[in-house]
Image (cartoon, helix red, strand yellow):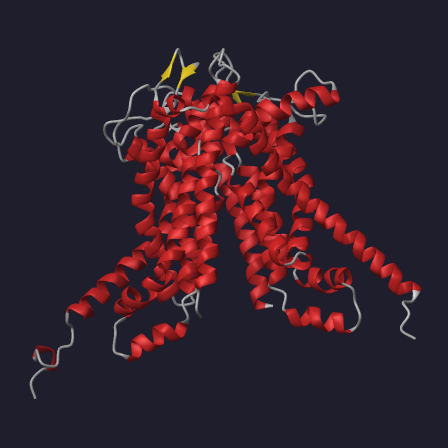
Length: 304
Length: 289
């Protein structure tokens, strides 16, 4: 017997075999590219912001409301007011978006039928498609005068304005994911409840909602992540003044908007520039945790 | 004997109320889309004309058209697609056709969710750090397109994976039984049966890419550059940033100009979306299995 590998008649590694191998390597590279990009985002942002270490005073950064990186005499990098800005806008947005999105998801998944349902789903998709800069423009040109007139306040670029807009922006993703979670509840659950004479609402409240609880929570989390990270709309509609808000009519400035507004004016490598990249790492870390939490919750459903 | 008891009547009343309440909530959520479109058309419609689309801005952007921004957006979208579509389809093929259920696959899925969830301004910082500075592209169309490509990659991956998984497993098995390799099966059976679904996702990505502002602000889009880009190393104007600029940065802009820009931008984006939705509906209807 000769060596099998040396015998061309037995060797089946033809063109098809080699191209199959080559493709499996290529698609694997494509597959892990998502991981590489996430690592790349972390590495390249850290690389630019790393030099900020020498200016890093934890007490000042997390304890001060004074964000004044351009001050000549005493540059301070307190992010408290920016965090308060982001939190107030996102908080108001969620106050609006969570009930409405869950309501819409319940209506679309449990009550609407046929054509109505299709039309509603398309409209939700359209809502998701509106670019954030257009939302910001709406806040600036339509909501601003509307708020000034309605509430008789001097300026309408405030927590209320950007919160409303952000709520509308975060609603589609929450509605879509919540609807998926409701759809994932087996129909046999509904049928069992209906057989006992329950109305549609009783079925929804007693059977479907408890069964879809975790998926709904994941939907809310992803909506929070969306609101938290929104940049252009908040930049244009929040008034962009550093402030600890005490009422919905105060102007605030968000973390994301600060980066967008200031990055263009900083010199590469300056402490201010590095500080903005540090903010970027903070944003990255928080959204990463939110997404991880949502993923773990969803995974819990599949196991349970 | 079959009369409704008071209890039944109460349940039925509540059922009706709840239904109306949820319908109202849904309506309040989707009404703004129609409202916004209405306002944009009413206020910006008067700015629209062929000249508006096909001439350059003049008088410090307070007059003239938006040709450079329109052309710039097309450049950005096309190059972003050239980068992200092959990578995205490869990733989707891996996840749908090759990936075993292990920790690596879970990590990839988590990375995709994160790529979609990371704030757009963080993508912008990544673009500056990686493409503008580290790879030395400078602020250019190339750097901006790459940033957009990374950002919209999850759209392609997720929609392509869905399209691939809609092809029944039995199709693949039949092909394997004929002695075909995995790649031959994908090329001859899986891709032809899912190509329209993949296209739907690509169109959706076009619409997403065209509207993004933050990621291109510092990587390659210029506030004002009244001529057309000549190479991928040039900066360019873009529709989305142009809207931001005429709305916030330029004094004495006539009222209808920014509304006109917003109308053209949203028209582009929604048209792409509508095509994608129509395509999907048509696909679902003609599907035979």
